[in-house]
Length: 125
Ligand SMILES: [Zn+2]
Image (cartoon, rainbow, N blue to C red; front, side, top):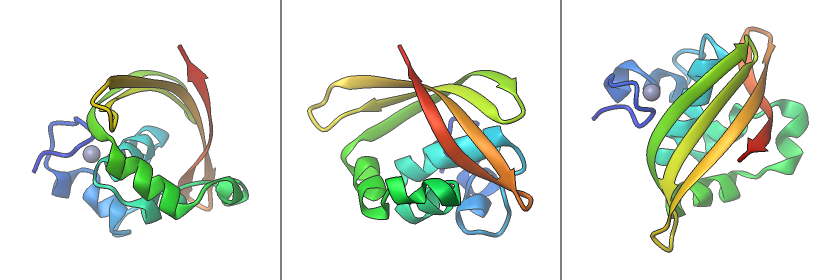
């Protein structure tokens, strides 16, 4: 199948190696894409694992998994990469009522021991 992150690559050649732990995402953008795919699949465990350890207390695997399941994740658009550790994106999805939604966020990532983690996000209009 094509990767849910809209890279136009096969899932096996794109986000899957990150999801299985075979490889670590080499850039903040690659991690961001793999997290979008992890909502689409969904893979709540991967979403927890790639959240910064100090921020994990504010999230839980079950909620992330459910958020992935109840929505249909249709498209990811990378809007901007203002720096090494920031990615602005729009995630398009259809919610459980069938309404089309866009989640526009400027995310901050951090590299810890050669692995990228999601730290926080600023929601944009
Ligand atoms: Zn991908």
